[in-house]
Length: 96
Image 1 (cartoon, rainbow, N blue to C red):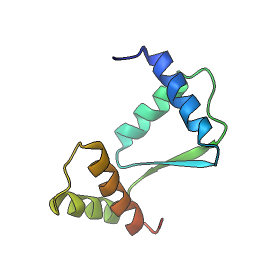
Image 2: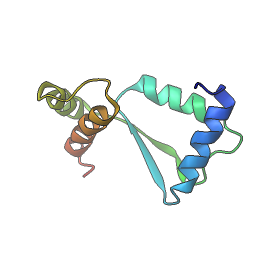
Image 3: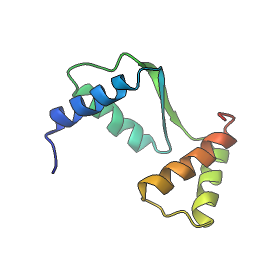
């Protein structure tokens, strides 16, 4: 069931706050970055544990590592495989 945007934003915001520790959000696409920012802008309260500059887009080397992970068999647009590929790119960027 789809939620209205404000309700979805509040659910995501509350979930992020429940994670307690300081959060960094990583994305492999500037479009994802924009959508995430737009979603949080609709939330009644911004998560306190989310810094103002926590969104990261992969470098060229990270993007290549991500593509290599997909070429090795990960399924594109499958949430878990997308996360694994993003992690591969993140590690190349020195974020391990």
